[in-house]
Image 1 (cartoon, each protein chain N blue to C red):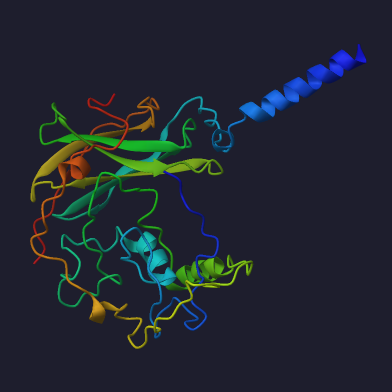
Image 2: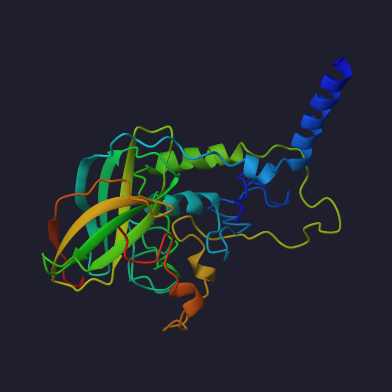
Length: 143
Length: 164
């Protein structure tokens, strides 16, 4: 009986070693998802120029995949936010909060845009939060 | 893609004992295209990329601005930019402290260029921290050649649209 147990143990151990995948083993599984993701600050315009506008907001840490994307739906028509911008950020599991920052390129100078924000995981799954619709005006070209 | 570690990131040929400005103002290059010349520039980039953005290519910052100091030209490709960094709000002293930390990652386990790859070049000299080596910079052509669609037309994951 002891011999059978020993053989079984060796088989399991060696099988585990032979089938191990070190590259995969080094990847952490996704963090636990937050029960509810809430926007705690913003969204607001971090910077705006005729060249580049950056929208920023803060949520509680949404968890899930470390790779996340901030998403901004925007447009000049309040009822038709037809444009989408998204920017990559990486979650810090040790932080209670997450700051999302999204670049909006090639906007029209001196034009008012409406926008709302949300965030998604690397697989495209929504974190479930969404802001109200805000607006901003792109400044004219710098002189 | 695998990411290399920061281990030994500050190592330079023994003849050229620093990566930092001022002179010798740089001895090695960083990033995929060598655009960054020192650890100080590297940290300053991540700290201020989104503070001093300009719609210009390298070598064409406005008058009064110094490239890699208070002018960062537009990115080659926007879609893969990481926005976790870019405006860290660090002071100059805090940037230097991060550089000092990176310099502690030299483990002394290997000596640089121990064999046929022994460094036989000359150390860079001259230059000033305020210009970050711009005097030797090769200007990017204007306009830039069109970006390959296989690069610039690829949206970042996840995709495709519409995004929920």
